[in-house]
Length: 447
Image (cartoon, rainbow, N blue to C red; front, side):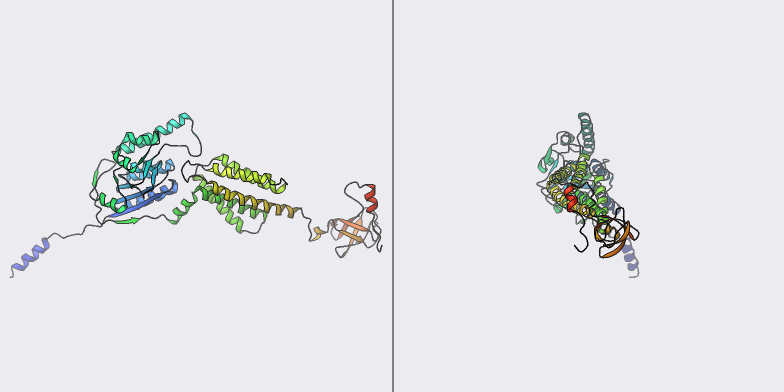
């Protein structure tokens, strides 16, 4: 018995400890809408978090019409350098990975698509302008070489992939799978992860890695408030609305000093709009048309043109808005309805407010000492040259360059301290006719 216990204890100590395998972690990141600096920052930040946590897989779900080349390359660079395998998945059904999205899809370790999706149409364009033949050839060759490089490293159909750039070809999910542009088709995330469990991935450097995704926990990476806010501002429609509302707010503050709120809100809106335009391709002809529209609205308020300048301003602003940002991508420019919805109210408000300001400045001052100038009163005593006059219900010391009899009507010319300079009402600014001179003789007091 004594011998058995030490042997049993030794056996237990030598038995290997069973350590449960860690649960696989998958980071899911969504690329929705245009590829631009904010979306690129969001995706690379999410990927970096997955890398630091040593997740089993990064799932990049794509639904994009394309976007900016520099932002696209930043995302692809992060995908290639990632020690965590990346699967690019075009989903849900009805989505697409066009233009820049096509490059991102082919750059991933695993390329997958959901039924009813498409990809391709990756011919490069100069956003907001046109290219001559030489520049067009340079840009096209550069994009094609870049795509050949990443597609070749991933073992995809290089020749067919290149036609997406040179011929703007698009491919359905079935065509892409059949011609070796993608690796698999999955209707949803659950089935995608099930197909990838045990899948052998060939990394960019040629190394192979087997995925173990049974029972994987998926965490969806959400954008921060900053990223979400800036992404919304980069919508061309929102940027245009911010610009016009900001200009209107600043205009109200300049014409009605002291309101403060319109000036503060307008300044913030203009700065946010300028931030968006600094990241978007701006057509300066469109910006010039918007400026011209504002000039037309100001002139309409100053001169009577029966609405001709106001109508021209609306047309100029709408055309300017449509030309201002043109990425040649769906949703990448200002819509006609947004342009009309902004231009018409802006024209009405601007013309209305400016006319109020102009009329207020043209009205004679009716209060204070300045309000005395131009007033008509009565001479209480004869002025030769000094005497007393009754103006505004008050008795004033006055003097006149011409003798004025008591009781005659007088007009105030200026105010010198507490003494008025007056003239008889018969003195006119323009040369009067003989008939008018007789009709405008002063009426004696008590007549």
